[in-house]
Image (cartoon, rainbow, N blue to C red; front, side):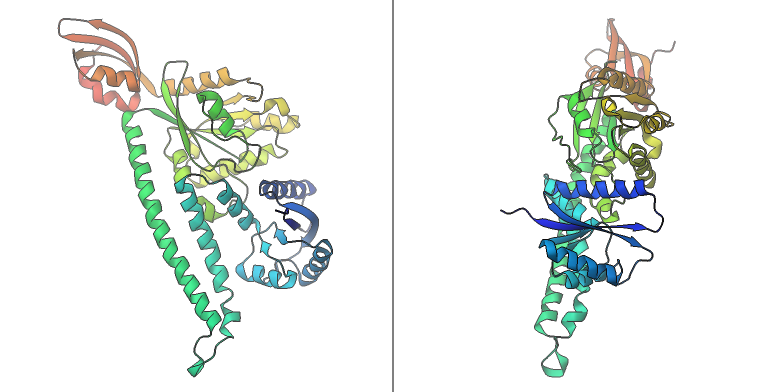
Length: 417
């Protein structure tokens, strides 16, 4: 199959910083590369004011149309969010499909979604994205009216049928997603009742979250040098140096200007961060805009109401630092910080120690006198750590390390100092 050829259109505002323009262009190129689409030509336009019909100015659109025809492209990709009307008008001028930033990210999500839940979520997001684009064509189709008393023409009837089909499909998807989320909620509730401490890995896409999960837990989650390689939530258990068992979850990466539609679509995976006991932010120290990526992550977590749960900042890929100033800014953040490079294995022990210190803050030590034969002993072993046992006639005196949230459950067995 021949590789698809595309023209890329990027925009800048009047007087915009050249570094910002460069970074945005580099990011959209990385996104397109993830889809294995070849950019054969590129146009950059300065926008004084957004045109309601074509986003870029009419003259700019004409110039782009003439340029793209010389390269015989299959598609035009523009790194902005287009309204359905703007997309339709540009497609009419270019005579090839036009995709905006949201469409590119949707396509990547669809490509990388593997679980049933993720595929349902992305199908719903695509349906919601498509629906207004059908409606935008109603004006053209309505001109096909014919028959008695202006009965609707074939084109408009097809539009209504397609719109109705999309609405029905969204309802079915909502129902199926809700059923899966019920199972997730049950699983999450069970974990919370068990008292097992949970961490969620968050951060900008491609910061190294999956690599960290694999390195710490011996898992084999897909880890690629591509944006949004991980969409499905993966949770693994981990035993820390202090003997404490914890759960570690990988979550979907953030990106600047992430469409709100996709935040809603992947609410379930983001809820792993919202409902965890502690959030770990992973920052890529080698990224040319490392500080901007971290700020995007912090802003997203703030929007989600989860910023107060951040317990640790992992500055990853420290062996590939290109900007000492950015690195200093990362280290100066108001979070407990560790530096790692999982490519060469450095920092793993430091990270494990930091996680252990965090859990120590959430555990208490108790001395308990428990009846012999009680299931509490095995329960304490699963959810905490047994530090010593002494057998008496009908009881066992246990020294244990217990989650603070569970101490009240065992208070009646507590031996007062």
